[in-house]
Image 1 (spheres, rainbow over the protein chains, first blue to last red):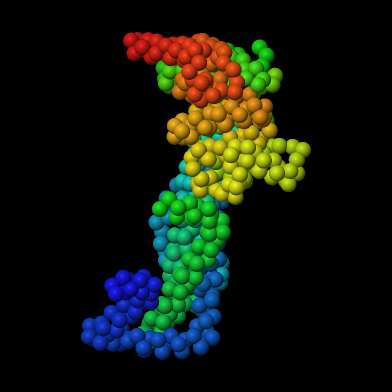
Image 2: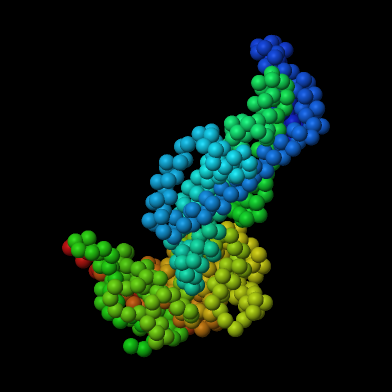
Length: 261
Length: 263
């Protein structure tokens, strides 16, 4: 009897967890801990969310926000890996890029937005600029560490079979570094979602971020929670895409790790 | 000097001035085609540095290394190193077959299908039929080293430089692998230079043992192993000639270690 329950709990762990969260939410609502105006019940939010899904402007904003995050992430991943490669090839440039990164990295996305709006307007250039500027660092830093960490035996093996420095980079170092680079890209995916929402809130024209602001000031609380749910779905989608690519390019590493566990 | 591999007055040191550390000094050797030569010496004498210099992966500061009459400045075609650390030498993102094919990247005169057939044939020769599609990390340590040996041979190698290739495998596997290496050397016409710290292994495998002195190292003694081939794990190790050679090498190394301890 008890093992039967354990098996069921294992099988349905995801719905059980979701049900728990919703249950706690509903209890807090019923107890009236927070003013109902700011903390609507689950059914209220569900109805608002359902209505939003039939609203074309919400769907359009959702797609816009997701595309912005995706484009920013792709740009940041490519630029980050390129910077890591340049750093690996040239010790002098490596130090220079590291200083720039140390200075720019702590600046939050919100601080970039006002000046970027003046420079780039409210279009896609703004979002690409801000997102890339704040998400480029994890792929870059992980890339530098991973490329430097490729062992001497692997490098000597490559040299022994006649690889030049360029060949070593493409045939040995990058494949060896790719799993660690992907750790950086996954982290960058999370940052890009933060950056896009913050930028949309500040730029104040379109996207889910702007919508959250607008609805919040209009006290349309159930809809605000519905929009937040959409942001969460964006995160799941973006992570899913990154994981798909990661499995395709570094599936060997994931299987190797699963094996050693 | 003649021979497939020669070293004349080779010297290698690191650093300069007061911190200069000489590893190799005035080393000469010549390996004839088809020979199996073991290099042994006291711990830390610079065996691995010597092997790196012989392979062209390191450049000596002094003297010359020659392979088939050409001065070695980079790893030449026809020479391959089998490293001790097979798990780091095999590329984990490639299957065993692709690792062997990676070794064949400078092989000319074969199309992709011929290369694949040749790689599969060599994988079978090292005792790994049916493991071509596995990844190195899916097979045991001894099997990984077999893949690395197969990769070396597949590179159209004539000379295998073996850097303590069996130090990391267990004792029983080691005996099997010693016989496999001797068999492969004969079957694929490989001249072999084996670096090992195991004196018994050095004598068992070799036609000739070169004993290296303490750092900065050079060849201090040459011992010809007068034993018939093929060798046998039981009877060869009991033969008087084996015991004599083993005795001579061990005594020499012990005297060097004591000399070092006294100085």
